[in-house]
Length: 262
Image (cartoon, rainbow, N blue to C red; front, side, top):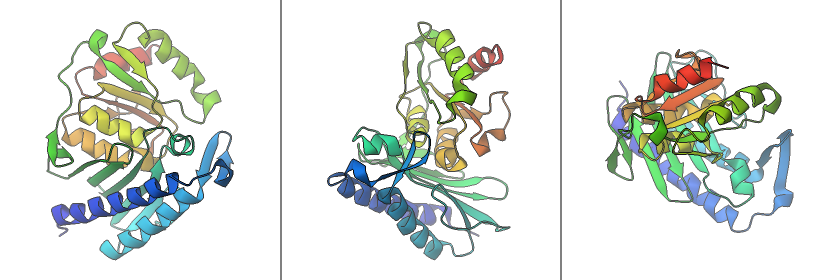
């Protein structure tokens, strides 16, 4: 039986340590160090080194676990446990010295998410939770907002790299939400933004065509803070990152209705 509380404490320390490395590297970072993975999708030595350090430490914490990590580290076959790691979520923000960007680490079993830790580097904010626990920000318990009216809702959108596939939905959301909600934002770091919904800073966050490592930690943090995460049909296929509607739960159906009208 895993001691999730103790393991979460160790993962928190690891995330903060990785974040400190990223923060230090940002001070001397040059755009020439950037590599292009796909169109407008970038990676640097910082992402790769951060992932290497995180994976090495996680192997020591739970040797029997597999990995799904953004830059390809680790392996996954039929392990009981799996780490989902984004060593630098918000790489484009990092490259341009623009907040937010973060480290995201989650642990899941074959059945469910067990641990979520997101360290947002620019604001020195560590969000975390584990199965059966509340969600926390730097030691303070957090909860989703009580806003239940779409007109008063502050909503984050994500525009993924798969622009041709997502553009119809992106335009549909902007057309239906712009002018009908309190505000729309594009921050560019899914893991951090899910935590911002958990902390009541946003009422919702919507995106598709992202990776499971982008949303795993933020998902359990949001759920344990009282929020809701589904795919665009209200189901649970969101775990893959293919469609992710995250909200405080109170405006969730309103947003599903808007999405369904595309």
